[in-house]
Length: 63
Length: 184
Image 1 (cartoon, rainbow over the protein chains, first blue to last red):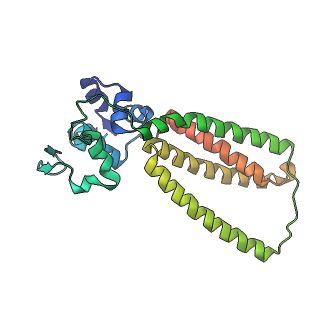
Image 2 (image 1 turned 180 degrees about the horizontal axis):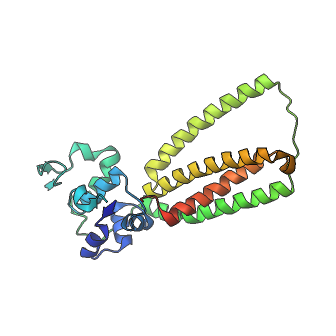
Image 3 (image 1 turned 90 degrees about the horizontal axis):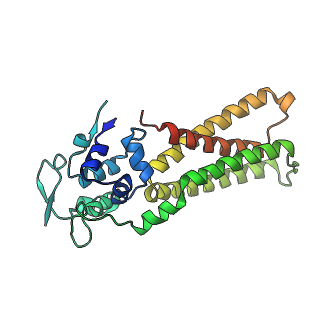
């Protein structure tokens, strides 16, 4: 699954650590999501969507 | 104050702190957007919660590096210096009954602890731990099968060797998933 997390984070000038703190997850989690090594759970996907004030479909895209 | 989640609630404006997100698993969702004073956290500098700071100090990579080394060490030591077998004092029926009871109790406690672990720890690391645990179990079963075929040459596999293989494979599985990921 592809995602726009890196772009959205860069637009807000947040580091991976900043985003991780906002989502209350580890920096490794953010890195793994951005590199496509890990698809987040539904609660975490909702958290990400809420943080960026977008829908899940606007952030996560099917391959 | 009100807030909007486009695409989730049909773009309907929801009163601040709706019940569906105010408790349970989704309570973090509200907390990640608004602080207790109702200020939008998207605009504020991030603050690390106590839970996050405690978690950051745990370092799962180091913990699983340790598990991997312990498993490898135990395997080498146990093969070189196997433990002596002690004959059971109880009858076979008593031992079987006690083993079943003990297994049920430990499995129940492990289930509760795993549920707690899943709720409190990072989802990414929990998934890696769970997936690498499956790798460890499969590895241990297959190594045991192959070892049984070569029993005349290798001798009977002891429980300690099996546990060492389980720990070693768990550590290997963890780092394999950290390297490759499981999103593909």
